[in-house]
Amino acid sequence: MSETKTFRLAVIPGDGIGKEVIKEGMRILDYMAEESEDKFSFESDYFPWGCEYYLENGKMMDEDGVEQIRNHDAIYFGAVGFPGVPDHISLWGLRLAICQGFDQWANIRPVEFLPGVPRRLNHPNVDELNWILVRENSEGEYSGIGGRNFVGRGTGNEVAVQSALFTEKGCERIIRFAFDLARTRNRKKVTSVTKSNAQQYGMVLWDEVFARVSKDYPDVETDQRLVDAMAAEFVLHPEDLEVVVASNLFADILSDLGSALAGSLGVAASANLNPERRTPSMFESVHGSAPDIAGKGIANPIGTIGSAALMLDHLGLKEEAVRLNKAIEETTRQGILTRDLGGSYDTVEVTDAIIQNLAKVKAEV
Image (cartoon, rainbow, N blue to C red; front, side, top):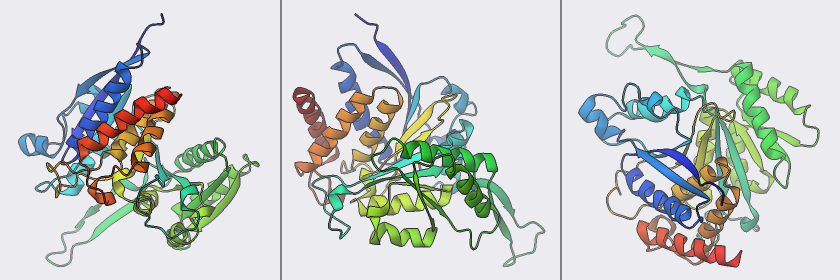
C-alpha cells in the first residue's frame, strides 16, 4: 500500500458567516479524506484571527502570524469584517497581510452558471456560459501607497492621495499566467481589461506588456476592453468571454458582477495563488462576512466548498476536485438551494446533500 499523503491546512474561519461556511467546507474535506482509502488526509490547524481577535488584542492576527502558517500546504479562509472594526483595518490586517506577505500574486475567480440556480441573466445559452477572472493580486490599486492631510490644512481641507503601483514584472507575470490558463481551456482566448484612456501611465504599461506577451502565444485569441465597456460586455455578450485578466481593483469588481449574474456571491469560489509554490496559497469564497445573517444558519456554503475544490486541485488531487464540483452541480440541479438562491434549505442541509452526491458521483465513476 502507498503511504497516505498528509496535507497541513491553516484554517482561518474569520468573522461572521465565515465561521459557519468554513465548518461546512471542512466537513466536506474530512469526509473526502476518510473515504479516500488512505490516499490522503488533512491535518488542520485553526487560527482565531479576525475582528473579535482585534477587539481583544488590538490587531487582526498575531505579530508573527504569517510565519506561523508559512509551512502549511494551503490556507483555508472564511471571511473578514464585522461591525465595530473599520473595514480597512480588518482587510489590511488579515487577508491582505497574508496575500501580500506570501506574494499570492494570482487570484482566480471562476464564473459558473450552476444548474437549477435561478437565472439572473437573460441569455439564450446561459447553461453554456463559463468564464474565469484572473486578478493581479499583489500590486495595482491595492498597493497601499498614499497618505492623508500632508500639510495639516485644517477642518474641511484635508487631502488624501491613493496611488496605484504597476510594475512591468508584475504585469507580465499575471498576463502570462492568464495566457497559460487559456491554453488549458476548450476555447483559447484572453481578454485584457484596463482604463488606459484615463489612467495613462500604469495601465498604458499594462497594455504594452499585454501586446508584447501575446506575441508568445500565437495560438491564443486576444481581445482588449476598457473596464466600463467590459461591465456591459458581462451582461450583453458573455458568450465572448473565456479568460479575463485585469488589475487588482477591476477584477475584484468584475468578479462580483459575474457572481451576481451567476445567481449569488454565495456560489463564487476563489484562489489566491503563489504559482511558484514558494509559499502556501489561500482559498476563500468571494462573499464577505455578511454580519446581517451570521448565526442564522442560512449562509450559502457553496462558494466556500467550491474553493475547497480549487484547493484540492492545487494540492494535486485533481480527480477529487472534479468529483466535488460535480457533486455541487448535482446538488443545485436537485433544487437544494439556500435562501439567497430562492431556496429554503439551510447551510448544513446543503452540505449534507453535497456529501450524499459525492457518494453518488463516486458510485457512478
